[in-house]
Image (cartoon, rainbow, N blue to C red; front, top):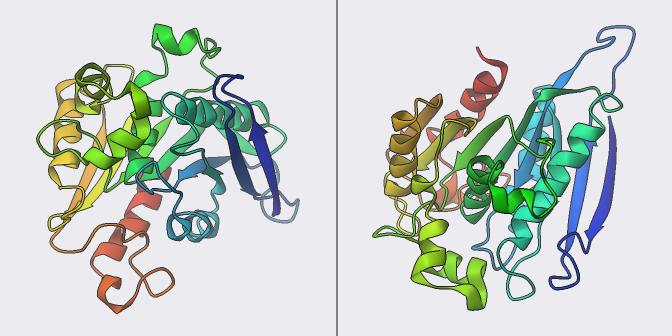
Length: 272
């Protein structure tokens, strides 16, 4: 394995001077046991309500994917008040395009590049999946499809701007562009199409910060469009559990039942 960290500077243009950081953990091939192997890759987008980037949903998550033979990347994207929509999405698309451009060099299957987001990072990951071929995204410089995710992993995601919305996330995302119209546009259960990539979702029934209806609404929209998805709803657990283990949680967040999402998503990635 080799690792790197780099800054994505000013990818949103002079009007939004974003400064995101991309960390990469790339698995090498060896003649002894994995010559010429092409691996999936996951781009991890931590949560934080679009106001900060949670470290408990960053490198610890990437290490889980590495353990399964999946190269992993973490994008610490720009947040409010420094930027507003669509700056964060441009950073994600820039990172996805970079990973795909280096796929051969990094032993990555270019048809298995997946976004994995938590909470507001889940909203960002879902946005990458539903908006990738929109005309306004093409006008931002993404027109050749190299920025398209091949799948979405959404962990207790912020989805809706409606009844079950996490309003603070939408206020941070939209800044002074916050309005009924922009909230509706970013209410992602209304944006699913036939071109949305396959999806793995998980949530807890007792999440009081981002209600489980967010995942249920998105899953229903995927079903309406016949987009393949897998949904897991665990019976209890607070918001922001990440891996739900001792590494990232105190004793109240260590939930073996919720930890089942980790082997489940690895199986989903490999199609088992």
